[in-house]
Image 1 (cartoon, rainbow, N blue to C red):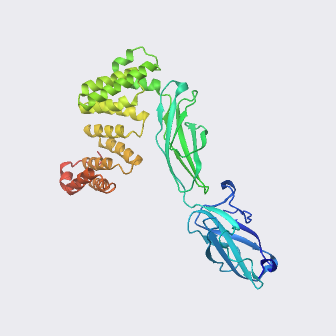
Image 2 (tube, rainbow, N blue to C red):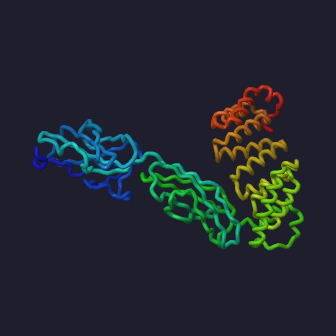
Image 3 (cartoon, rainbow, N blue to C red):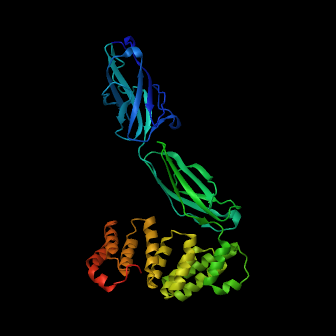
Length: 419
């Protein structure tokens, strides 16, 4: 039968999502910003018929996910009354096509290759994953400060520029754009405005093609710590407090401090920790903002058995780089030596919060639980150390040995659970 002789047709088709409808015509896929979006696997599709098309015998729905190259029969509307429920078999750009039948015939033949859909919709029922990492701030003069903002964003349907970055001053500042619609490169070097002072937060927003939005924000970041840091470093280097130095190190001092850190690391590798610590202190006299010198100084102080000084250096470093793994692990070891197991556990938990598969940290957490008399916690942590990364054979072997020896370990380190 010629389609023109059919006395009814699908005159209007709308897709109902969250209470709104979109007029649809047979056309090529529109731009993303014009597409209807479905953020759930199952939704209703509304259709309208001419009044004189009744009674309807059947309403069949077809779909395509390759822009009309191939079509698949979805099913028949059970009651022939709009709307019809659709459960998407997958995510992506979907074309829909109704074939409706009554006593006069069918509205059209079944769609074939290259048939244009009556409706286009982008289906995406999985929000993106977005994680902001701790930024690195280069403490140069105020008009040259660079913050290295880093993130991870994962989604099958990200657009080409899905990233927005913003910051706000604490405690109650409004969010201000850093950059809008960045590519998902994982990093952006932001020149911090010279007039910005105090503590800020930085926020990541990830948007996918389906309209989902995920946000992740940093903890508080102090962006002008120079005077505070100089004062705190002077507690590690008392003689530096009496020295008259400019608050901002010169380029020459910055270069010299870097060289001293490298020399200190050379001594540290040879277990020459007195010499190493002297070089790290010299570097901090020139440039108190060198958090890497603080981390390495903490390591040398630990090796020399000066655990209080070790925790002091690590604490200052962690104010600058809160997620630094070397500093978190080092301060945890120092706290264990001081028998402050609660503080050690807190820092190790920070490591696994940032990297849940850090099996060395899980092993260390098991040991700390043993020291605290928490056998259940120790067992759980040893199991994680043994199973999360089976290819880390050395850690797996240690975790297995500790699990097997757990009763004797408990007796040996029978500490009160609240210690």
